[in-house]
Image (cartoon, rainbow, N blue to C red):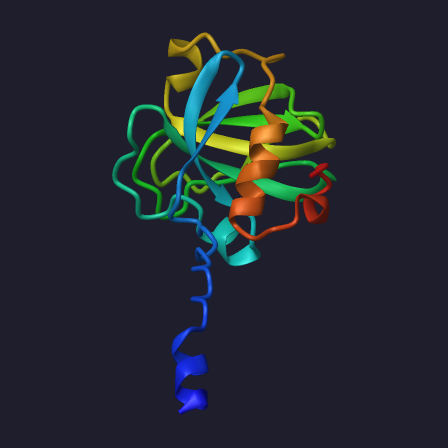
Length: 160
């Protein structure tokens, strides 16, 4: 009888929330604008990107997060939505912006070899929102979003 009484009094274990995925959006500021970003961090996520997406909400985009600074090279293979891509330095500064045309398989390469993040948005978004080179990506919000994805920000060179 005592065993039954003790077993019935056990405390419930707290529910553990599942980590977020690439399907989840995170509010992260770019300059003075807040963008709902999906984070492409894992190689398979980065390879697929926004392929096959027919539309993006007005202030939504995809942020590609690299482990180390490098030259960026993107293309629009199987991507029907016209986009603009912004390339950011390791300290979160927007350095370059380029238009990308639907299904265009020509590479959109950065000039700089020292870039760490790329943000794809609907074409015209940067211009229409006054976001220009020099605008800063909120790296603290990005680190928090990475943690929510169960990715250590240090793994991609960001402080936690």
